[in-house]
Amino acid sequence: MLVKVGDRTYGWGAEVRELPNNAEAYGAKLLSDSDMLGLSKAIREAGWQPAWRRQPSERIVFLCEPGKWRQAITAFGMDGQTYQVREVAGETKV
Image 1 (spheres, rainbow, N blue to C red):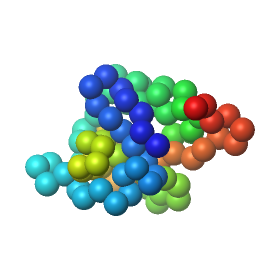
Image 2: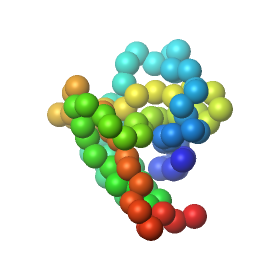
Image 3: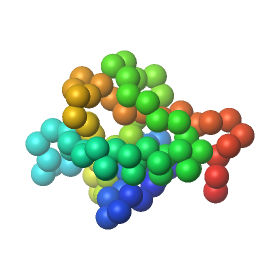
C-alpha cells in the first residue's frame, strides 16, 4: 500500500518489503509534527489504523521512492519505536 502526503510517498507491505534501504540516508527520517499529522490522516483515509510500537507486530511504514528505496521514519519523542499500521476490517477504501 502506498500513500502520498505532499511530495513524499510512504508505503508498507508488498510495495516496499523488498526495496533496499536508502543508501543516501543516515538513519531514520525525522518527521515534523505536521508531517506526522498528514501521514496519519492519509493512513486512516486509506482504511488503516496507525500506531507507534516498541515491538512492531503489524506492517511497518516507510518513506519510499516506489521501486527504488525505502527509509525508516521516526518522530520527535518516538526514538526506539516503529510506526506501524493494521488494516481496519471492512473499512478499506479503494
